Length: 260
Image 1 (cartoon, rainbow, N blue to C red):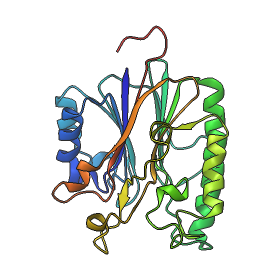
Image 2 (cartoon, rainbow, N blue to C red; image 1 turned 180 degrees about the vertical axis):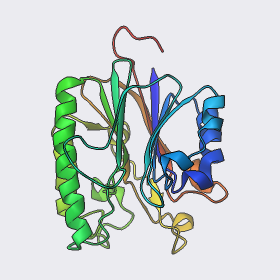
Image 3 (cartoon, helix red, strand yellow; image 1 turned 90 degrees about the vertical axis):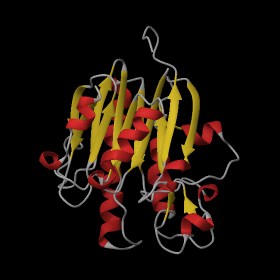
């Protein structure tokens, strides 16, 4: 079995030790990180490498940045979205045996009708084409990350407050559901059809204490992968100086013929 997680760390420099502790103590095989907020050259990889792990990064100063942390060496690492010029570091992919993992940090969008919102939708169109290509070439595909979209009203603490607002608009959800139409499955929702649980809470408004959250961090898996378990680890939101996101994870059966 392979356990894959995703965590928007909101600054790897600030939360490097939290990442190391979590990866060490939670039996993960692969962990996708978002919002590194560091250039590749500034990232302290030594602690990860000293533990015998592998860290592939696609960093950017101050903003964005994604990485894949793993216990086994990745192959065929691709940074960015092929055939799409985007100055932001938002995508990184690698193969682990027969499994292909794509880690995404979807643009926030700022506000519906803002210029950055249009960029978000355009970016998602390019991602959809990229994932369609990956689905055609990699039957065992996992797409993880901070999607900055709540899939349904069940994933929002107050759907009426967020109706046609950022993270919950029809346009954003259509773009996300277009990925589901390619054959990707929402692992958490598949395991917990009726459960309301969140992965992100604003630092403001006492949102964590009041559980005013949204589920915007996802682990999507292709139809060929057999899902064993999936959940959200809210423990990370209780850390000292926590990220505003929690870890989301899924465990899948290894593709036929591969050992654990």
